[in-house]
Length: 339
Image 1 (cartoon, rainbow, N blue to C red):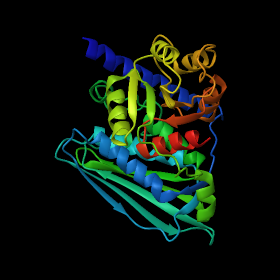
Image 2: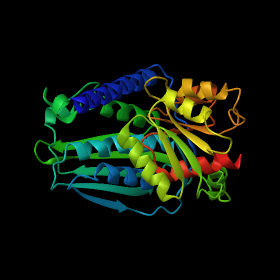
Image 3: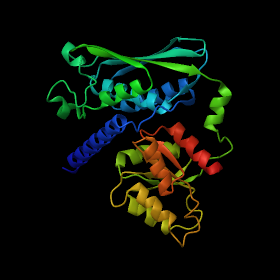
Image 4: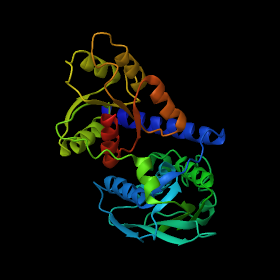
């Protein structure tokens, strides 16, 4: 019974987040924010996330990636990642064990010498869609069969959000599908080339920080998310103390001695006290010498500018969007410890 309640709660939270995403896009609050980026690293992250989705599935995952002449571009890496993860997570969801998913990246000439096009193609051998439904795939709350929402636990908003993100980036997305045979999604984006030095400056690498034996206080209420995060952090040599809600993280830090923790990773959506409230409570502790200085990094499914600003307003130092990618976690921790 508790597992069913947990699944239902997670599904409801996903639905709420998706509705908020749609409303922000439609109200114009979501902006296209290109920054200097290594475009190949976006595909690296997407591939890693997809492999995580497939960890308990028997699905062949084939990755074909062309090497660009210049990987350094101006792009909104977060939006591109979310588009591709949405498409690939659907491919995993709607493909039965024994099936196959292909993720292909190719590059093509742009409108002038400063631009080129990146084309992402995701093909699966899943349940597919009827010709009539393909016409409505990007409509809000669209799902082909009334039973699909229950069987596949979808919200019917993922593809609508994906299409709006692609539109924000002035790209195109095409779909071909046949019922019972699978689907193909093709996303094409025009990117402006830049140079490596701008990307390196943007990333501000912190190679001088040794994360081995780093003491991390992890606040995460979802047991599975916590277990995965702890495993990945400990594989990097870090020592992790996990608490399950906002109230516990405040109490744990309050009762700790100076130097007990080097950094706090703070989930936002938690019971008892959310991540924003917990951060404010920690910053207001009068009797702990590190209450005002320990780096606190938000971990949340929302990556909009106002979500990042809310984290900063609460007293956090940085922001990580879920699903968590360990390379980004390590870079973010190192960057904040460097400060």
